[in-house]
Image 1: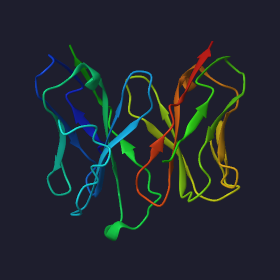
Image 2: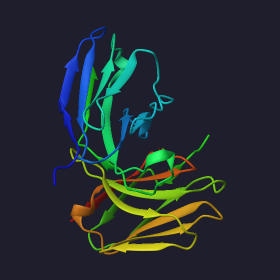
Image 3: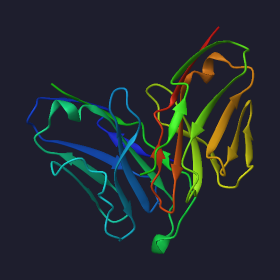
Image 4: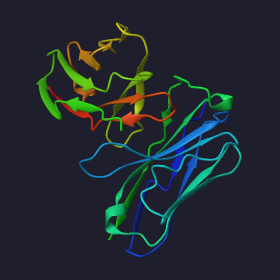
Length: 119
Length: 111
């Protein structure tokens, strides 16, 4: 079946502009994650959605970052007033997940990422 | 704070060589350890999920072991091929659904 898809694949923007990144998870996956990888650094957790629970926003680096998810489908990550340090590859992942916040060892399936460059 | 470390940072080997790299993580409150392979311009691909101390998993020429008491996992590649060239990421989770990733080991296999 179709994997996780992300758009755009590449985005170049000017400092101060807003950008919106999109993630389409695997159908039926209730858990969705956003990560980013800046040059020379590891994958950094940003935000996690699980079903209808309140999202875990603990990884968002500033209030310029926000994300939404419509039900158990598409998610958008918005970065307002972009800064050069926001340049990174932004990855989305989805997982089957379990209801009620139970722990799971289910694999996270990643999209190909959006490479964001802020000039 | 969960700190996951990987070594070496990068590795260059000749085709046919066997190689291994290390992932270390805090052993307290351990829940699961994940290995991913991330090729340039592609999605990270899941290799293994390991939960039990002493676990050993194998996928073709790639295998991994887990020691939860001392907090480390090894990934082995037997008879490396150029197509094995990628960044290998490990990630650990503790009592949550969040994965904390290491910075990865970048492997290049030369023909």
